[in-house]
Image (cartoon, rainbow, N blue to C red; front, side, top):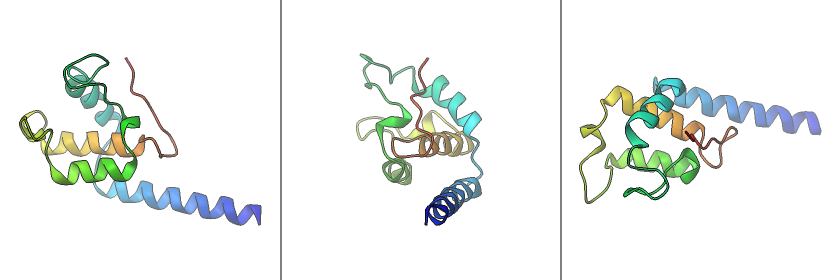
Length: 108
């Protein structure tokens, strides 16, 4: 029974990873763009408040990027990042969200 559970878990993780990979995003580039563009306003005590991949679940991050807005009171994300860069950031945030197999804070 234990082997079946591990197999099912592996298949679920592989399917999710493949779905994100189909979007063409790069986790490595996404982390770089997140740190370079997002962390300037989204650190502890900053105007935008602290934001890390752990701020949301995978589903919440996906919904956030589906709306395409940065904040209702500010400009769209596309003002700060190209569509390719946004895909990279989305891949990084979703793959390292609070409920992901590899959660990450993106500190530093």
